[in-house]
Amino acid sequence: MNHLGQPVGEELEHWKQRSYPQRTVTQGQYCRLEPLTLALHAEQLYQSFAKDQQEANWTYLPYGPFADFESFKGWLEDACLGDDPLFFAVIDNRTLCAIGLVSFLRIDPRVGVVEVGHIHFSALLQKTPMATEAMYLMMRHVFDDLGYRRYEWKCDSCNQGSRKAALRLGFMFEGIFRQATVYKGRNRDTAWFSILDKEWWALKTAFEQWLDTTNFDNQGQQKRSLQECYS
Image: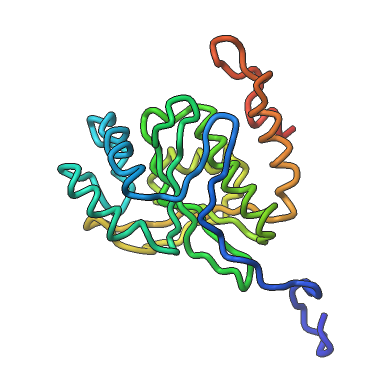
């Protein structure tokens, strides 16, 4: 309560503005995140995304698919080299190839809020330990290195794959923003999810248990699911 007897939010007596995410390489066991550059990553990403011959992975993104490498490279140059969104390529540690894209966006250091988005994982990355680790590395940077308070995930409410992925990764569903935007000539209702700093420690422990090499058998199959590691 304030001095007028009105309910107000929790006081953040020691809160200070946080730093902006940096263009740094983040190394993991299975993959690493590298700041996106055209010279290093454009051709590899194009070839990785081309393995999706039906181009289904582009359906819920507001851009693409691209007819050829030059148009894809042009989009990267025009839209993906700025500070917000801040794009990273996901690199397979075994092949050293770029097999996915991800970014921080709507970055607000003043209040410690950032969104993860523009996630495009090729067939080489989807449903692998690398995919989970890439998301873990992004979260760890936000909470451990930068000290942010809130980490957001938003997607088209029709995108059931993205919604399931958010829940699997420990995000909490917050609701649907109806008629939030228009893209590719159609309406988008946006599903909102978040993780808060006070939830991170338990999630981090679960991620690290799941990603440990002892959690996978000789065929690379998980012994415990990520959800089981949460419990």
